[in-house]
Image (cartoon, rainbow, N blue to C red; front, top):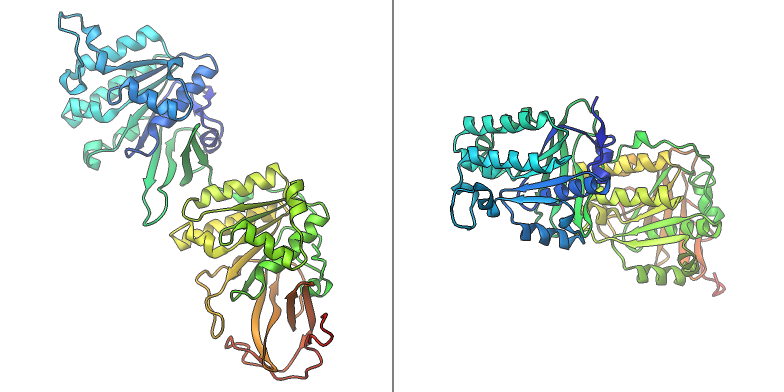
Length: 496
């Protein structure tokens, strides 16, 4: 079995279960702008880091263009050899004047000979060949092109070199010759997707890798200063940890009693209701109590500004600032137009595994959904993320706004079935006042009350009243209370 070498990209190595088998030929394909050159440079830089000779053979880009890519990432391309055909006339020795010699002006056989001579001279451990589209242009015939690629493979097969062939996937599928996949030991495909709004999204997949049980499917990635950052697809079943499934109190006994003493570790709680009904404040109440116990917590804010969230918490006697300053609480603002679900899942993993966070709030699911145009994929990704958090013993609060303030309220995201507990908030009318009601629809973690209680959120924090009966119109979305006034939380003394 050949040794396994690092690709130079941490995320890709995880997907490949360690790296690339050495002394093999690999194809990296993708449309222009998908990140092929950056990934290839990372591959060569890793070789230089471990003391290996590296060679970049370019038929399509000049040294100056490669240098510009390197500078954008803070890299120095002088660390490895670069062989460009714009200066290949130095090698011909046939008396011609020194001039720029473009690939299409050369005979294909001569091109291959020059490549082989340069490899013989450098004796590299890692080689990047950029790109096959120029070689396809020189061949002008699919059969001849295929023979030359096969000749390249045979040339490198007797050498201690790991080779990346770059293909920009220009032309039709027939012109690109899908048979090329069978000639290579592995195929990595990079894609760039342009959405109707927001930044372009990038994803990659390993189409084949002989003899390796790699992680199949699409993986999101971004190109930042420092190279490509790949976010391996989350597989929850591979992340199980032992934890105690004890209840998590909020500091408001009456609210905890609705959930049989409180939500349990490793479960998810969906807070659903119309805007202004108190969903975020209830989540903040649990968050504040956890921070007071010294537990690390994280809030992913998609809708509100962080400053607004802190000011709102202060208005309800929940001072979050000391916990933010101490590092116990992290509130992260996310722009749904700029972040992919894979990147978001990677952020959550870092918080759980590096900072040991015990409670996570996602506010809101509408904002998260905006980060992904395909809803059916969103449900699958959210299900996998919640399964992962459950395996890690993290309590997760999901805030799901409903459409409309009154009437038959609906949501554009049917996610209640994957949550372990569902808390429903409603406005109701009684004695000429608009009030709030809270009830628990389900709780997989244990018993729960089936009563409807009044909810009051003011400068005294979150308060829950006595069970209420004799409602009319609960299922229509416009409940009206017709019972006695005694259970209602009246402001009789001006301080309640």
